[in-house]
Image (cartoon, rainbow, N blue to C red; front, side, top):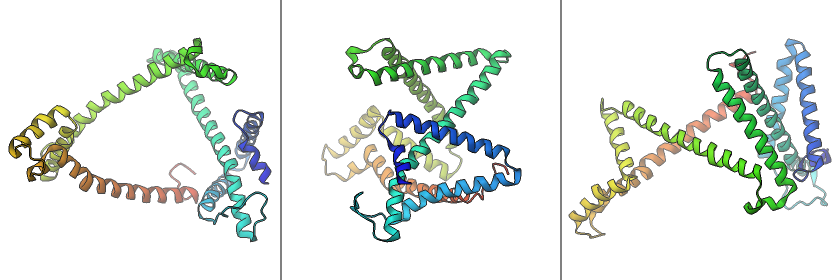
Length: 297
């Protein structure tokens, strides 16, 4: 059994990896087909058992005692050590299977996008031109990226930019020069919408909103070099006479912002993270035990 899991952790890009990917794909399609033809009353128990076993493995790998300094030639003492060794050795294989299934889900998403926009393009529905641009961009990026990947695997000299060819420059231009730059531009423009939404949400209507607006203003001004230098440091230096040990230095924008981040923002984020963790744990248990029914029967 261990040899079966070990074969899924073969060196990258070896024939064993591609063979195991095909095995996983075939087994996955067989499982989906069997699930489709299974009686309706049996589908939920089958999914429940598969989900429970998958979650149980990761819970055991986290909770089960792991043998320390136990080599492959050593014999485990008792069932606890034997089970711990089995769980540890199987982890790489299970992770590889999980990654393969994730790739299958990604492929399903790509297929869904293709079907939606191809139908829209063929029927020339509203805004079909945008669907054409999306499909052309996607196929161009796929073709260039895969060609670049294949050439890099067969020609190690392409690591040096001096040996680059057309597809290496094309991938660099499309991905680094266009996609990442457009992502940065999009998120930069979103920042202005977030600022406007924050202003509308924090308008002075009550004491609480006034505190929020004032705190946000202090933090934003402290991040602006010119505002912090002229509005804070210049005024404080005139009051203190440049004395670094003066009490008024504690009221500089940078110091006030640092105090807010350390004593107000930090504990608040920790409390928020704790609440999110409890919610994620609760939702994870519901999904693992198949108690979540909001997605359908």
